[in-house]
Image 1 (cartoon, rainbow, N blue to C red):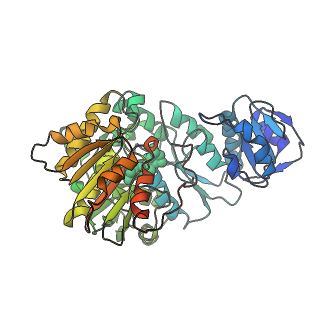
Image 2 (cartoon, helix red, strand yellow):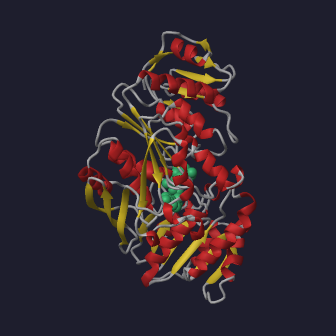
Image 3 (cartoon, rainbow, N blue to C red):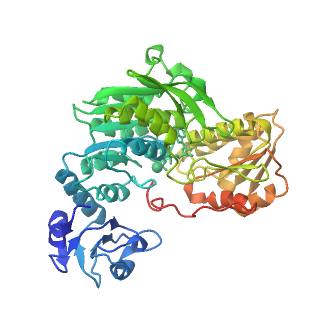
Length: 495
Ligand SMILES: Nc1ncnc2c1ncn2[C@@H]1O[C@H](COP(=O)(O)OP(=O)(O)OP(=O)(O)O)[C@@H](O)[C@H]1O
Ligand SMILES: [Mg+2]
């Protein structure tokens, strides 16, 4: 954080100062009062369950210099009309004060956090880098992340999300990116957008924001992403995966929609993808400068395009091939509950992919489950996929069909909204697995109790709202495995 006086904060935000104008904010800006720390600024936000204004005094008692608020609070404050707008103004001020920092934005329907975490671990090799914790990618998390930058910062690797048109353009105005990565256009939130073409329009706002001297890094394997090449002033760099069978193609793209002219090798790409017994990919990274072998510590073939996108971004920023390959091999999963694979002492493997769910990411996870369960039985505990709009029922049925074709031994749908998954599975007449709907995670655990044996693999996946990560943790705890910290930092408010 660049030190700012309360007088400066009031001026930048157009707010009304109630406190010492000379008091200086030197620490982090937070919206969670429990994270308030000495020297910081607490931004009070009224959420669904709680109103930050009620925690203003607690935040100041914890050391916050002042509170950014929309109504009077009994502690030093800057009163503003709109807290997200104030955060945006402060973040933009910081960006304008740091002209030497290179800004990269990453968007897409699935894999933003995975790619951002990989890219950050590469770019950190070049110099001081700010990247969000977890999924801080919306009108709150994005400016809060940018506000962490200071004079030492050389790179910002940012995750940009959209729940509607204009959202990404807004985030790009806060921190104008020079580099933009678009991963894919999928069903996530498609219901809110009104369809995939609308999702593509919105995600493409990132490349529209790039300057002529910048680079638009586009997934050559996703036609809707590749088509964004015409929407940018920046130079276009493509990434992709040569072995298309190793990739999880977005379900909605039928091969007929892909014209032969579009099937040409991407500039930065992975070839010869293979998975080890825990689903960790190895591949050859091909670049104009040469090639290098990579083995990821992440699980699932779907992480390969994410890794190649991260490589393409790091390369644009000046990282050499050897460092890119070395960095990808060394990179760990920084954000929780995305394809966490634990093998229990009794030989049962648990995949905790309970962070969120949409049709593409569920297919990716089932693909990985099938691979891991090659020598045993695969079970999936699936909650519903939220915010799919009118295609919701059909999407759940399709997932069920996909799961049945993956020859799972058991499919447990958690909650009535997930029940259509089973209807889809029953479409596959040859499928002999067990299928049931249970009301909650506890009932899912009960259904599996005493069934599992060495070699079995259990996938746990659902939309965030279902909170199934506890089910995965229980599957591990009940077998003496240490549970890892329950609440990852930075995964609370943002999407
Ligand atoms: N390229 C990909 N294709 C399909 N699924 C993916 C891909 N990359 C990651 N996933 C899966 O998508 C889920 C979410 O991953 P991640 O958190 O990286 O995505 P995100 O785009 O940041 O999500 P959010 O919109 O919630 O921020 C995980 O289950 C992950 O395994
Ligand atoms: Mg994310």
